[in-house]
Length: 160
Image (tube, rainbow, N blue to C red; front, side):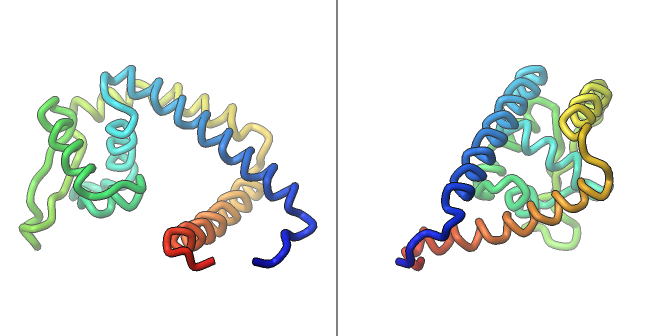
């Protein structure tokens, strides 16, 4: 294995910052989930569906990819959310093997009720960034996401 680069200390600092940000986001997710009486992962599923549904429902596989969870977990959790009246699950008319999920009217109304508070939080978090800086951050994070995905697979395969 090659020796660490001169910036190894900076890399570690960035990783710790990312871990801290992730922890803060997880705490926020748990607090929002509690308001809805659901678990943190269920809340993530609901938000993913809310963001991705353009009117026809969202396949389980797409939600799984968005929240980085296996489809069997998403299926189990969405069945529980359906039982609670927070979302609907229907088979796709194009392919009956595909389950399409949408938030219920009740869930949409509940989410809309908190929309202003989310906007305020987002404004606070990103207050020091103009539109160009936000686009730059998003681009760099997408790059890091791709690289960490590759690194994760390499680590799992002991191929590094």
